[in-house]
Image (tube, rainbow, N blue to C red):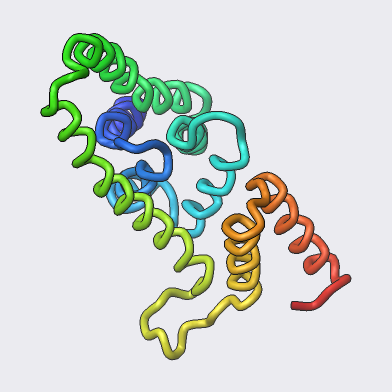
Amino acid sequence: MIYAQLFLAFLQIGAFSFGGGYAAMPLIQAQVIEKYAWLTQNDFADLVTIAEMTPGPIAVNSATFVGNLVAGIPGALCATAGVILPSCIFVTVLALLYTKYRNLSLMQGILGSLRPAVVAMIFTAGLKILIPALFPEGLLPIASAKFNARIAVYFLVALFLLRKTKSGPIKVMVGCGVAELIVQTGLLYL
């Protein structure tokens, strides 16, 4: 039963996550936290970090991680198969349709209308990761919520480096990891 749940949950994610891994994050969160309670919000933040650090698509890495956590290697295989199956079918059908109808203005209109929805999904996913990192005890009430200033500093420095200096994301991730390692070992206090 758990294998079918994993397969169907990630089949839905794979079928409706247009725009890549970041756009899939709200859908993954809805399935693994809200619907099935396989992960907590803090576990989900760890999942996102691990999925981004490991090679491969975020949705596939997330499916493999959650499937393995819930039901071992067979669960990882079921969840991963579920998340990639819709893409395999959609891409094959879309490739055939696009090559046949690519010059139609209707096709260009459909593709153009999907862009704002994808941006909104990515923004929502970012907020759902950032807020628990900054406020580990939750937002309500915000006046008494414990604010994690160190994470805010990492975020702002990383944002600056990525946007203004065009530093690569790998360098920024390694830099933040090294900074946290220094803080955790007591060499620097933030």
